[in-house]
Length: 109
Image (cartoon, rainbow, N blue to C red; front, side, top):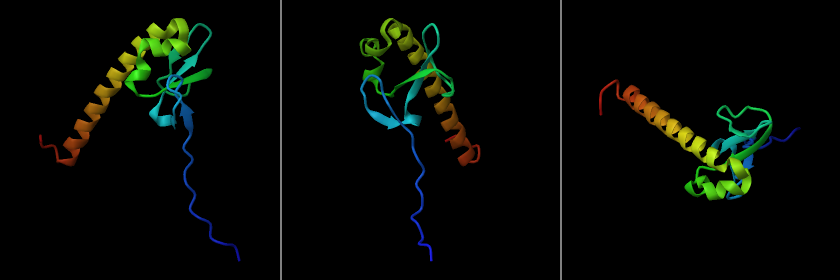
């Protein structure tokens, strides 16, 4: 008689931040990919090419820290990263407000 196995846990892919070298879940990191010319922000997370991952910590977003890995692209990467984080924070605040409106039946709280 076969034994009942323990329930399977879902595999969580881990990636390492290129600046602080901490391993984190892939969903917590921001991906960059390298094309022929330079490094680009991978907004979809599906682009081909060599990938590099950055965590959400402020210290990892400083130009001096980025220069260690991205070299001459560090200033441009920092600028792209700031713009991307501003957009994602604004989007997450809007979706949070929308969820609150739905949960409260459309009433302003």
